Image (cartoon, rainbow, N blue to C red; front, side, top):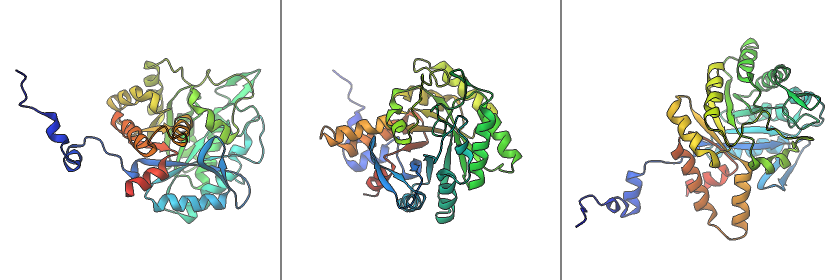
Length: 324
């Protein structure tokens, strides 16, 4: 005879019972919504590679930021397309460019919305790479002062948090020192601590025109085969002053997320990246999946693995579904 003294199904008998014993929950306050800023006025154009996401001029980004805030989402992460590119990526720290102007405008219009800025050069360099280059080699130490300029300019514009995504060694420490020296000691750093050289980034690169003009990013982004290396990266960023650590991509790296949560006390973020999003949208458009159920299950898997913060293009939809 089987011992049926303990019957797990007793705690699944009704929606109320399942809610009562649920171990993992998803809340709108877990979400960050990415915005893509472009030059011009009155522009809200759907991005071909990211259905349901838009290129926004600064004025339209302010409207979107207000919608985000009204839905209860706590913050946005700002990406942008500049008016010019060069080898250094100098438009990345130009205060007249769309990213800095959007940060400033959003802070003025929606003061209680957290504004996070992406610190990288790939969207701004003529090469599409995240750093300075010498004979096709991406130079680490020569790139750090440029990243510091980017971070300080974004803090000057009003960013609450900067998020270095370039994966240059030592950049968190250099940025922390530069921010502090400029008087921005309260601007926090969310480090893309374990950012893998992933095929899941394709739609994003199309959205911001940041594909490398030669080679790839495998010499500075992490090898997808590596696990222990992620924790060496994370430990370095923590030692250099990171306030939040991020794993990117999210869904294929939940083992890294879980172990990160178990090892470290800092808040853990994940980026539900463009390829993950686009696959869901494509399957939903083909009628192959229940989009809401699949997205919510995916978000719960990220929370269950240990993420507190989820950067996701699904954020607006999730917020509306949670309201229901």
